[in-house]
Amino acid sequence: MNDHNAATLAAVRSSSDPERNAVTEVDVAPTGPDPHAVFQAVDLSVYYGSFCAVRGANLAIAQHEITAFIGPSGCGKTTMLRCFNRMNDFIETVRVEGSVLYHGVDLYDPAVNSTEVRRRIGMVFQKPNPFPKSIYDNVAYGPRLGGVKKKAELDEIVERALKGAALWDEVKSRLKASGLGLSGGQQQRLCIARAIAVDPEVILMDEPCSALDPIATARIEDLMQEIKTKYTIVIVTHNMQQAARVSDKTAFFTTEVNTESDRRTGCLVEFGPTSTIFSKPNDERTEQYVTGRFG
Image (cartoon, rainbow, N blue to C red; front, side, top):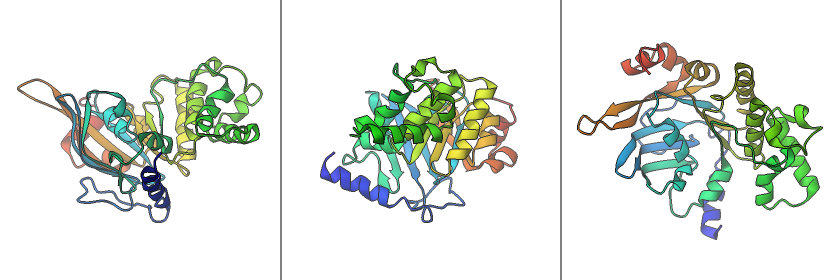
């Protein structure tokens, strides 16, 4: 990382003060930079070639809260989520317009190192994807890449991360066993441990329970509640009951159809406290979705 990038992201880290970032109300359409937000999307649009997948989204995400993205398939929830740690960079045709601010720093500024962004902003995917390595090596992978070499230090990191993912007691006697031998729910918690082993501030979760049974889903939901005191969490989910159970704020996305091309563009309809979104939404489209009339 060059000195400019290091200075830019060092400034981001120094702004991560819990008291300064405490947010009680988030504007749906911010008019300027929000000094209290971890993330702020400002007029964010995402294109795949000439196709606009998400158009003009504005929202701010608070520290140590769980924010859920809900909406019908194809409305841009995952595309939006992937903007927050620049995972869309791996897709050649993607173009991002507008801004994604992280503690006031534009993540898409050329001076920002995308690898460092992904270290600070971890991601857990829809399907558990442990590496074909031991449980220990799965968790130690990121710290090793970051330069941690001493075994005692790695041991401490692995234990801390597995405890943080509520998995330590289940695997501590078989750390050399393959991570692929764990159950689906355990594999997903292993992926969460792998994400937190590099000490991120934010964890993005793209439908992390969609491939899990109800018992494993409940364990992951409990875990999210436990770790949100340390991390800011953003989750994409098709399960509205899950969003209602676990999230502090909810963003509802839907699609708009271009009558000339029949292409569907995602748009953010409403964003606010989860209790409001599910009990007294301001937009009729939100009410129709959360009551099951479409989607």
